[in-house]
Length: 323
Image (cartoon, one colour):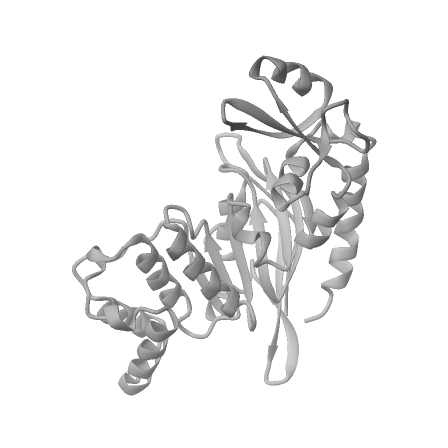
């Protein structure tokens, strides 16, 4: 199974270029789409979910039906896509005075599941899968943020979708709910394409087998997260500096990030060699990959990260060629 996005572009009437020639190959499993707010993530997700039209480009979903593989043109055959799509948008409304069980049953009817016994079995199974069985009779208005997100996933799973899109699903969740929710998505990714669109790096660092980083409508990097981190080994340097020294370091070096530590500033720099005395090699993480990909100036660092990023994209596309 493969979702293929080719040369997708979208500009809004106010002149905002939300997507700029975006191409991605998304295989079965968990796929992370990382980027800051306003990077174009939600626009891309809405186009894939058939809720918005691009200005140009193509999207195809390779699926297998009755033992035969075929391609669905996502932009032209929207009904076929919707039959295999589960979508959890960043914000969704519920009826606060209706119980989880009753509203899920109602959505199942809208999905075309008219047999009452079949619907009951499905509702029971989804409430169990999303750990809402004990709360099935509670009104949705009394649900916590994590419970509400899990209910949204239950709705998205109606019809056994093979393509699942979740947009900023962990925003506002407490740590326990976040872990529970991400584990649920990981389970779903064993048999489906699950696209996790987020600006939270930690959400994708361990769960996603592929990741793409988008900024200002353009894909900056697409790769295996662990492979991208591995290529950063020996290139990330760390030093604690006084606040008044920070501007000099930012001017001289490719600073990836700065964090306050006990009143002093920890600087992380991308460099193929020790920037200067006092810097120590640091263990890289996906956050370093993210900040490096977001930097337009990191190419000055011998072009190392930029070259690897460009090399990763065609290999990724070739590897994802199956259905």
